[in-house]
Length: 245
Ligand code: 3Y8
Ligand code: NAP
Image (cartoon, rainbow, N blue to C red):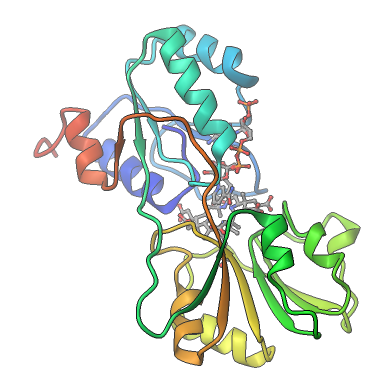
């Protein structure tokens, strides 16, 4: 399993309960990822070739890619490595969020377009996109930014003085109550978010709907075609496991 999402953790629980001989994989992006009930490896494989060698060396019979919809490099590597190794691949991917009545969403194709979508007059922006793609926003110095990171700041660019912004450390999944309180406490006027889908990151969008706040929603990157399901149960069925635990 290629992990790093709530769905990956739920599938790992089901595989462990079914006594499946599985290996869970993290990239090693965070300092202390949530422990999984399967043997776990942490770190990159070394591109397509490294992953293909891993599949062959470990005699992997099935790969489930349960990575985040924005982990496009990992997912495209998995398509190529599984084809090269002749190992069946399944993607467990949650559907994108769809706007409901009351949502004030502005869809943009990528980070650069999200920066362009910010207003010219100074705003107070909740940047709920993690750590890796914050710099282009901070270049727009007229705005005040609230950042939410998993690990403490190591990159000085994220060490914002109080007049420029504020960093909160939190891992999620988040709740609507806590996200609404966060938005109100910091007087947020705009939210920037990836269209990650799933329940773990949705709270801020539901809080934004209640508060009538605009959301700049970044579309998912392209990932090559692969067999895909949207539920843990369908992934278990693909592995021939439904009803066996
Ligand atoms: C390292 C594993 C579980 C998995 C929990 C989900 C839910 C909480 C919501 C906000 C949005 C964001 C971010 C987010 C969410 C879940 C899920 C999800 C978003 C952990 C985890 C790893 C990562 C990597 C991390 C990224 C960052 C992105 C923060 C663990 C907690 C913003 C994505 O510091 C960094 O470099 C962090 C990098 C990739 C995006 C970025 O570009 O910064 N996730 N997140 C995984 C690995 O090493 O392989 O530490 O326990 C997993 C989870 N993050 O089992 O309960 O399923 O989506 N993760 C986004 O969706 O926008 C936070 O703040 O509102
Ligand atoms: P990415 O850009 O698609 O991948 C970059 C490289 O990181 C990959 O080529 C691979 O290195 C390594 N990698 C990624 N996921 C891995 C995994 N599960 N196991 C082993 N190596 C992995 O990935 P990303 O967007 O940085 O995401 C990294 C992790 O964070 C993933 O587990 C993902 O599910 C999780 N995550 C990401 C986001 C997000 O917003 N991007 C949100 C929530 C969770 P090699 O080429 O060396 O193999």
